[in-house]
Length: 371
Image 1 (tube, rainbow, N blue to C red):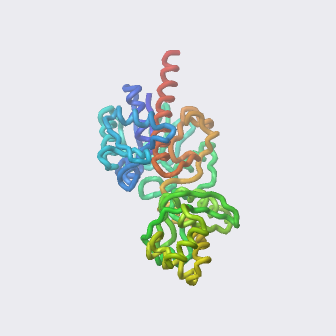
Image 2: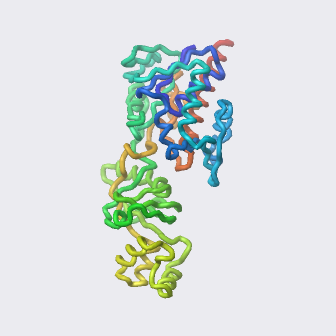
């Protein structure tokens, strides 16, 4: 039994290890385009690797998988799970250690050129025949870390379709001069994304004002809607409407201004200065701005800055991650049109898809052998 896995990222490495755990005699080969395996994992969670979340659908499965490799997890107050060392390098080290122990072969600097329907994989490093092939190339986000979007072309050539692609979990650009003036300022706000005057989505959380526009977890979680919009031929007018003080009503904010003369005690000097300048020191207008500060959004920072890709292979074209187009071809992780919010949920899905594909590969092989 030979399995060829394309991509040494989260789903690819999890799949490889799980196959060898279940079927030690299987030959498992992982083909990686970059010179090192697991490079994108190192960048997750600001270098700490937020690898799952207690609220994630597959948390227990992912936790048990990593426990089986000897990785101890540490939870924060929001349920985000990190390696106990708080270093993403530890996750990569434990995965590569498991590959070495179980006999997974990883071939780096290897670019896949095509996959034939008979599961022959053609690369610039040779030709590999396989009993099962797992496509785990990642999407189109952060190509420098390995995901250059090439996986979509490989799968389209085999009959799969690809839904429109756009950057997600990404910063938003604004034409307003005000974020630039307070670049580096953080605030916990409620933010609404408005498309042609209609609210399309909202989030409550931290916003970071930058020299290009907006960042922060709340912004990243809204970015899928913005990304899809700007990927259209005729995008709608996009505006971020920010409630800077969600806990107070407009009337309460006006009362505070009348009593203290500013919002410095709530928003800090930098944000207060911007709001009061826009309102020309009119307290009623300042209260309105504080509850609904409008910033025109002109786009996203693009795929190079996005954490994940929105869009991909439709879920109805796979069954338990096996292709419905080509038998014994499996599609995992970010290649699929399945996206989640920040907080470890996307990595949770990546591990889960690799583990599930591995289990199905092993189950099918056992059934064939028993027959």
